[in-house]
Image 1 (cartoon, helix red, strand yellow):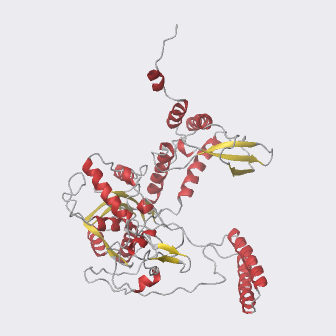
Image 2 (cartoon, helix red, strand yellow; image 1 turned 120 degrees about the vertical axis):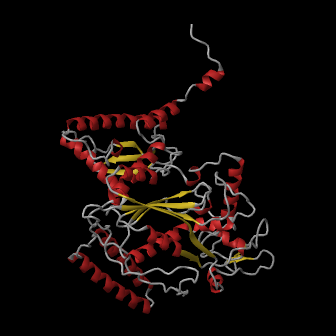
Image 3 (cartoon, rainbow, N blue to C red; image 1 turned 60 degrees about the vertical axis):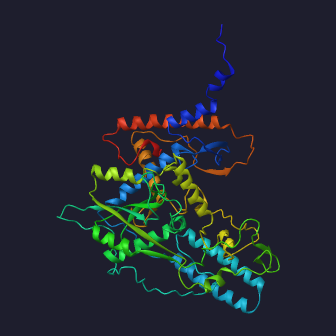
Length: 534
């Protein structure tokens, strides 16, 4: 006689989808794959293939987030202690590239002639031909911006470049085309681990909450978070001019317990603490925006769009609000000044040591979490601190195009009817970012000589080559395929648990082949390549 199960007992049993997700996590498979249609051009076979979502947040997909974190670790490790300069010497232009460029120059001349003659039909034909030539130049390997047929003159708005009197002066050396650090004692070539923080906004407790919330400067904290990326750019620029060589870095942006962002950076080469402190002290970023200290419109009293004025107007007087350019003309002093705090921590690290590995892990520790998940509020006091910061971020403009400007009586740049005054969809206003709208990982161009896609390709190539060395090949994979997106409600798309189990089955087979190749190979694999690379 079977055991009787109550409703509560049945509800405690795991659902089939939850079991499939658990198995997928166990085998390192994406738990929310995207369905893609693959068409084999040789056989005509159509299949629905699960594609990893590629999320970098563990709360959305833990396996994809961890895979991304490991890839970032490999990227950091490869570029931190380079001993040879990455080669970025451009190739010489080919004859085809030169010939097409000459032809494009002739098209520009013809375009100007037909525009002077008001021949719109001829001008459209020239535009189409230029688009075709530009596409062909891209295919031939020409990078960069090609000159436009109708260049738009930019209104030059000059600002004083004189340094502020309250900012220390720095030595300015000519920057050498060098990215590798110096060698000491003919064998030691250390690099640097650096941490920069923002200034204080008021005294805080050990849990990061302010001692006196009413005196804590939430406005400055919000604005510093929004402009933190620009402040970092200024710091790197000043650092390169101070030390006299092209400093390269791999860095991450994380929140402190007080929710202010700070910067962890692995810098190639050795830089003294005195120089780093001096550069941090002398670095600042001035925000030349219209003043936005006093909210003029709120509640139901908000600017409205006027069709005849083609812009926003006052809801009562129907007077047009000043445009962005008009508001900038009235700016005489910066609306905000962002600076670093006094805390500057730096440390010399030798490559290939356990300490270097620990610091790489520390750099990438929180990459699987969104910024607001790094320090979750555990008390009511921490929750109130987070809410007050988010409330201030909601009324802090994040860009010249931000709809929040309408609350301060200024029309955003490129204002349009669809704008909702005070509501901006920018990342800086979201709770998940706490004002940091840019990327979490900041990497200089000459860090390792490779992009993140290059590192991912290297890991896949390593695994495939290892399998090929022992005779394991992917002969059953189609070579000529076309990928298409599937439409919502497509009956050919299998349920998610089916796609998960299919991906798990493939992962088990790949791991078995990889393990067999490891056992058959002569030596241990490169630690930067893992089974996840497959």
